Length: 153
Image (tube, rainbow, N blue to C red; front, side, top):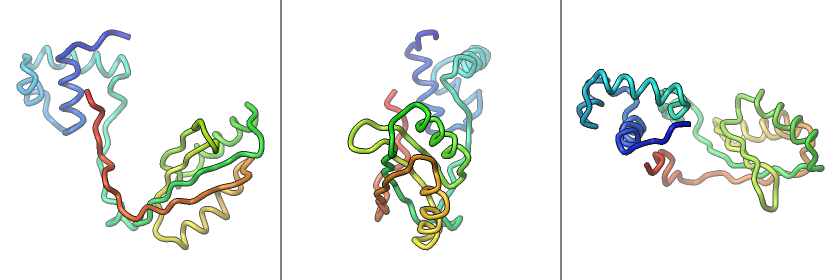
């Protein structure tokens, strides 16, 4: 991978704030000509620094008012069990994020659902059916304090 210079970092920082910014506006903000901006942008995409673009939706308005984190402890920590669990997680649309972690449990899952009834259904019908799940601990979020932090470039 290529090294990021000061201008590359400024481009990435601006894109984190406004991914719909025009090439001309972005070029102006970072002090480049539009052609140079386009070249850098393509290079940043090609080298994997920019993974994609998406809209930030309001989960409350869309009926996903309950945010839940779930600790998952597996019955065995073998490569086969990890692989089967990960495969199941990737197929579950309710799972927004899943991270293998070090510490007292194996995975941390983030999910958003309509309410506690929907979470109970997800837990019983989906999560507990994943291979290797021995135990779970649920943390329902009472207030989202910060959830949009850009990377500190």
